[in-house]
Length: 136
Image (cartoon, rainbow, N blue to C red; front, top):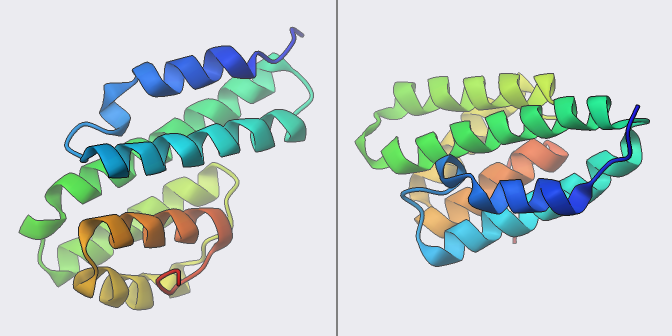
């Protein structure tokens, strides 16, 4: 049972290009800022470094899936986008986040009309809070 090293986790977050490749600089910064905040939250929710590493890994899987969606979304039809968002919600739930599958349709509709940065923000809000609408 070791101490939780949030600084090292943040460094690893920034070094993992699979979380942001294909995003522009603004979008990558949004992901990094969100990830940093989540690292601090997760560190406060777990009792030891092993539990933190598990939570950190689950969060990274969510961000990788989000990055893949953002990189492919222009080429996906509506059903493929719904499938991706369902899988994103499933991964988020497995990582301890609150989104529900009832959000798939409203989020898919919202994301379809948003620019990439707004869509990214909406999807991060979905993961973190379960919000099924575009943030204001």
